[in-house]
Image 1 (cartoon, one colour):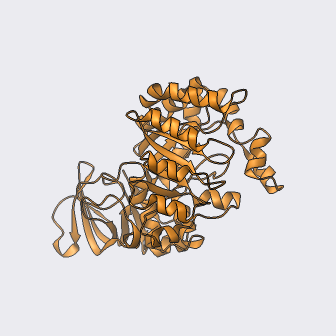
Image 2 (cartoon, helix red, strand yellow):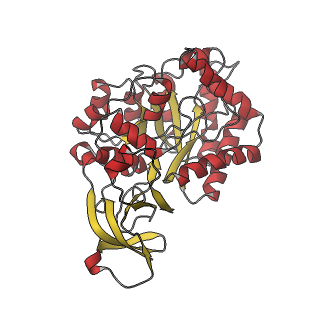
Image 3 (cartoon, helix red, strand yellow):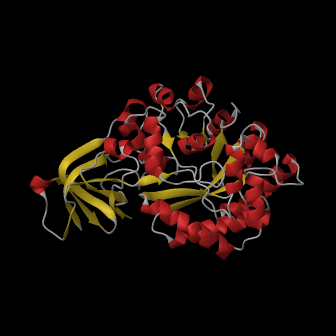
Length: 395
């Protein structure tokens, strides 16, 4: 299939480039008045309309063609609703206060325990479809609302079923270390997580730890990541609530990403410099909780790359619209539209370990693309962030 009369073809990246860092975060290849050929689901070739080949064509009518969004941090498998906690936030309670009262993650774990796999699947699929309709072509989905061996593995099986059901790429992550279950000590639960790792590795690609104030310590994190070596690579929740040391331990153990970073500064930048670890920032959580936004511009000016993700979850970021995440990157974090675009495409794909196949317009990559209505460009997507812009999403 050939898509012709593309007004703007954006996100063109040479083969072999897997992430954007520093100055390159603000750069992307653009071709005006273009065509693109798809063969067996992959990008075969592209070029200017002056040399468009013959063949079966779809007319883009001047729309923009861009890589689909790659959301590297979500929790979209959950049970029930936490809208009562939304009212608690309106009435002035903090995230930490709600958690101390038995809300937050423990509330979700109670609700999830009451559901079987089929019920969880049927609750999660509409959220996943919502994300795909909004242009998300790849997503990571974490466990973490089980908080028992049985329920964590149940969650991972549901995530695997989603992966087998939908056309988007789905990356399962084991987040047993999301909170400490009621009636257990932190030490006991870390021991059980470590014991669960071989079973979890049969279902998940990565292991994650919430290394932050009031949750898991640097020592806990090191134990889990050390035990997971050879089974699963690490990903870290870090520095949402305090400067926890999670970034540093993540880099030490070769974590693929360190996520949140609302409280991160120069020490974290220095730890990340020269590493293979991607900083992932979650502006939807900052927006919903009213907490600081991560210092994305400082990271980029220091030569690092950053990814942006939705953190779609029932408590602190109940939405998976990556276009809104891109807009928040521009409006609140002062990223340029191109910097934010690279953060939600190629760098998001890198933070899931799939940027060899997703996240850019590159010959040989998956044709996982968004075709917009006529007249759109990257700046307008972030600027008019509520106006419908998608004509179709290609998987």
